[in-house]
Amino acid sequence: MSSPEVAPEVTVGLGFQSDKTLVDYARLATAAEELGFDVLSVYGDLYYQPPIVALVTMARATTRVRLGPACLNPFVLHPVEIAAQIAVLDAASEGRAYLGLARGSWLEELGVDQRDVPAAMAEAVTVIDALLCGRDSGVAGTRFRLPPGAQLRGLRVPGPVPLLIGAWGPRLAALGGEIAAEVKLGGSSNPSMVRLLRSRVATGEAAAGRTPGSCSVVVGAVTVVADDRAAARRRARENVAMYLDVVAALDPTVDVGEELLSELHRCIAAGDHARAASLVPDELLSRFAFSGTPEDVAEQAATVVEAGASRVEFGTPHGLSDDEGVQLLGRRVLPALRSLLA
Image 1 (tube, rainbow, N blue to C red):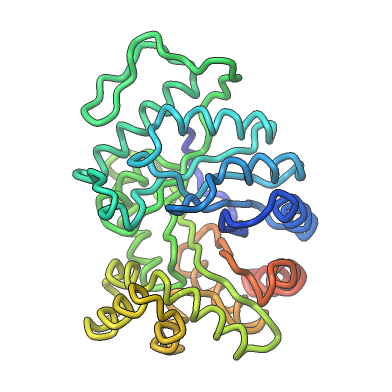
Image 2: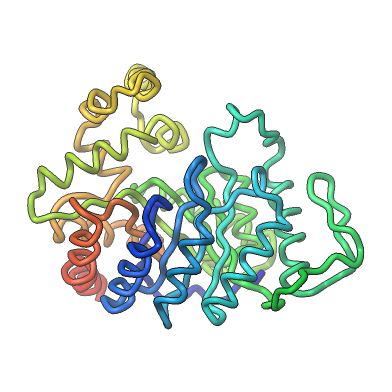
């Protein structure tokens, strides 16, 4: 995988859930590129459509933006399959693909073995990199192996592609600092957590002898922008409630409280999403989502950049509707953010 020695300037992207039609993806990707976004990501969440179909569709509708899954999971999709999918995306996008990998959530209900995640992730990257670079000497891993002579068939070998690792904890973040171009903090808009993650990534950079800051930090979260601040925050609260019981436990800079987390988990398990959303106060919402007016969202994004993020990813659902959200983000949030950072 490629890993630049100097961090790039701040970039801004959009993250999409894989729950749309191909027509939707093509339309939204075209609009996003015309509006000036730099990166388009599609989530690889459990039980949703595989992101590769949406990404190839978006690649064919664009000419400039980078594209990639954020993130695929080597514990449910073997690294050999991941390599093949990324080779397809890189060909479809004419070299604009990146690869995002993460450990994922809710896998315990599938009985997935996630012991020693950093070591397993490093082996997965080695297998993927060998296939993408056409090295056929094999990989003798413990969790993931590749026999000598194994190569991608019927696919152009693209060479190394930029690697993103999704991480919250110190060990996986440090691994990203050692081997990745980017480490993504997914599901957070908390500047304090950004600073902590940046320090964890720096540990890995130092261990690998890399220049400090050569591994960028990406911050992505649910985003809802609208001129009606209350409506935007209401929709954001509904979306954040779905995963807050997972990510809040990963953030040591926020004290959510066991009682609130337990009640959130109970409501989600019972399908009472309205009750779950009502439990999320504004202060907590501001740590796990970008929401409000265009000016609110631009100011929030500026704070995470000032805390150390090199890329901000505005995630689904974007607005009160997909198209309205993308347009507001591109026409009003993006210029406002760039003005704040100037």
